[in-house]
Image (cartoon, rainbow, N blue to C red; front, top):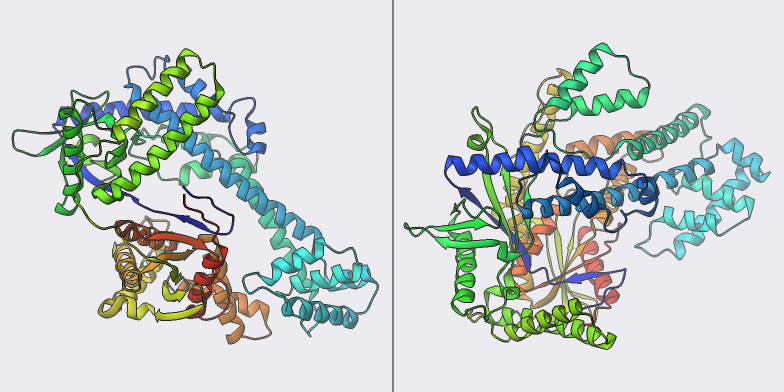
Length: 630
């Protein structure tokens, strides 16, 4: 078990996802497509709409979550609707879970947009021209500059390198009531923390203020018009909207944008996936040819063959073995120790003509716990689950006077606890033993997606550095090829957009391949130095670091000209490759999980060289630790 603080995140990322293709007779594929496209996806669409139309939706929006049980209640009512009946029970529960997840994510996004909107509004209320600031504090421009220099010096001397100066200025503004000090803070904020010597141009200030107003308007539009949408597999909504737009004038700007959103959005051509959250909902077998097969709860008459590469095949073979062992022991083993944790199947888009169940590919994605591959890892999981059940039983027994349902629950938990003492046979492999004080810090930036520092947390000393070129070795030229591909695709999209032609160009998997190379190299370095963990930056923090990197380059190239700096920064972002940092972090997590190395997340400083950022990231994570293993 572990306890987390708000500064650092740490967990064994032992769960990964693998996938295979499902192959079956045409009649089976047709049946599954019909269930998913004609019944389940419309069911999800309707449930999404009913949640949004609920009388209490605005209250939920303010609170940031749907009232518990409402989505289940609406979904259970829809089960009896003639449009959606005759689905397997798992399809209904999968749809309800998916809608809950969609709205949970949507409310989180709404809260983020709302916070951003409130920040923009506060800034608009603060924003004043130099003339207005002088009048507000009843002083000269020189006096305002002097106060700004004094304030900036005091803040810079005491500034934590992890804290953005703008953040400190906003905090200082909220904590003071002195008019001159507030005016000086606004003066600094609107000039990017600098004290300009040139007088402000009123026309440029008006343009800047208008940009903030437009930004607020757009954020408000996103909040008002971004309700979760379903999948219109028939294309009827697009066609109806086109016909309406051709013969009817829009009532207002909001309706115009709503029509545009529908007409400019690519129509979905595959149904929503089906999730199986219980590992015993999948039954594994072998056909007369010895090929692994699977069938699903509620679809037992349809058998699907497993097609995958040799690397993935061993996992699917393990799923079959686990189930056979449990069956042979007459359920004396617990499915809580199955290597398979959950699964889902979905259709992958493909181009071509013909029936959709013949064109598109059916894919099975399985989430697995890599620790359950070995006897040592299985024992670790067994102890965790046994302790968790013991705590639940203790709490239940402390209540006393249990009803029949609660007693049945305790009986099931005791049965599971007994079965956990009968683990599955697994191959033996020693668990990775790293030194907790040794960390591998991975800094991420705009030009260099990854830079590594191996740090001793107790002393703060760096044991070794690894640059991006050293991590990739003789495959470093792939990075330039990837950048050229991205720039070429960006140019093609720009040309296509100008001609109003197709502009959805696919990308190669070269970026993903480079991520895997980097992840493998980083994990190898961690193993070499017996690192206890790998420290990666938070995604939000990466964006701030990248922005600081671009801004620093712009200031160096074009000093004392904010407008030219902004133009240069925009051009520079286009010319330099924007890496998928989330994908890179996921690759590192996947590689680390195979070994058993802990992944920790912390704050990356926004200033300094990549080597300095990697070192400070590792030190910050080590100092911020408050994880207690029991």
